[in-house]
Length: 298
Image 1 (cartoon, rainbow, N blue to C red):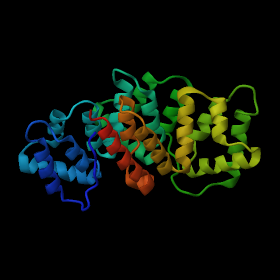
Image 2: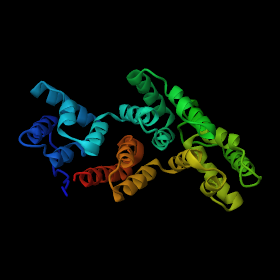
Image 3: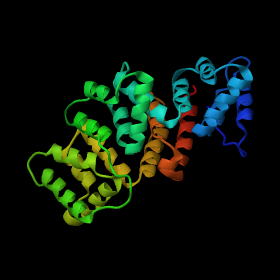
Image 4: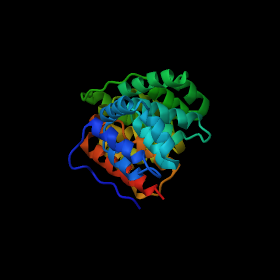
C-alpha cells in the first residue's frame, strides 16, 4: 500500500504544477505523488496550481488528472479539485440524478451547511446544471424527508449566536409535546423548528430539553422518527452544536472503513472549508482523505 507524507515546507503553486507534471510522465502515473500534493492544498491553492499548470503546459490539469487516474481515486481527486461551493453542487446533483440515487449524501450536504452556504451552492447548482435544487429534491425525495429538505434549503435563518431563552424553552416543550408526550409523532412541528431556527437556538433547545425532561433531544429524534427524515434531523442537530466535531467524526469513521463509492462521496462532502469546521475538522479531513485514497490504490 502506498503512503502519504505531509511536505515539511509548503511549496509554491508553480513548484506543485511542475511536480504534478513529472508525476504524469513515464510509464503509469505516480498516484501517491499526486495525492501528496493535492490532498494537502486548500481550494485557493488548488486553483493557483491549475492556473500555473495551464500557463506552463498549455493544458488543463483536471483533464490530465482524468486521463491519468482511474476508479475511485480518480473520482475522489476530481471532486476534491472543485472549490467547496462547486463541490457541494456537484455531489448533490450526482446524488439526486445519478444512476444510483443517494439521498443520504444529498441530505448530509444540505443539512450540514449554513444558510449562506446553501444559498451559494444553490446558485452554483443552477449555473452548473441548469436546474433548481428544489426541483431535484421534489422529484427524488418523499414524505416528511422531502418537506424538511425543501424547508431547510429555502428558509432564511439567523447565523448569529444570540438566542431568545423564552423561545428556546417554548420550542423544547413543543418538541416534547410533538414527540415523546403523545402517541405518534407530530412531524410538522419537528420540521418547523428544525428548519427555521438558528444553530445557536437549536443547541440551546437541546440543552433545555435535557434540563426539563432529563432526556437528550437526539434520543427523542431517534425514538420518534426513522429513515432519511431521522438522518436529516440528526445532522441538523449535531451541526448546531459543533460542525467541526461532526465532520471530524464522520471523516474518522470513513477512514476506518474500506474504499467505496459511498465513502468517496463522504470524504468530499465532509469538507466545506477550514473556516467552517475549524482546525479540528480540517485536520481529520486531511488525514482521512489521504488514508482513504491510499487505501483505494490496489
